[in-house]
Length: 105
Image 1 (cartoon, rainbow, N blue to C red):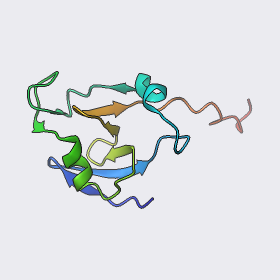
Image 2 (cartoon, helix red, strand yellow; image 1 turned 180 degrees about the horizontal axis):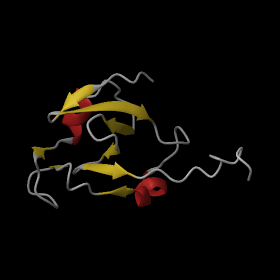
Image 3 (cartoon, rainbow, N blue to C red; image 1 turned 135 degrees about the horizontal axis):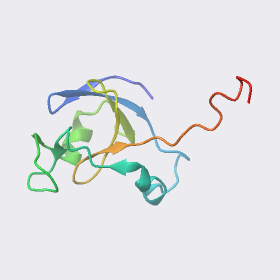
């Protein structure tokens, strides 16, 4: 996967990765890690909250430099997002239980 940035709605996004495990149905596994980001303001017109940009799932992937990626990083705020049907959802990564174990645990 190449991490080539692209512009969408005046912001820049970098493809990060696909959901794991690759090839598995993931909509129910990761849904608890998704939430609205009203501050970003990317949603379909007339949906859930006021939109700063009229988001389109198809338009986001048309602009994307990686058509198979599931998780994208916004360059401007450093947060991870998942393109969903009605808006870009903020993606909360699960804690990494292994990180820091080499320092005395």
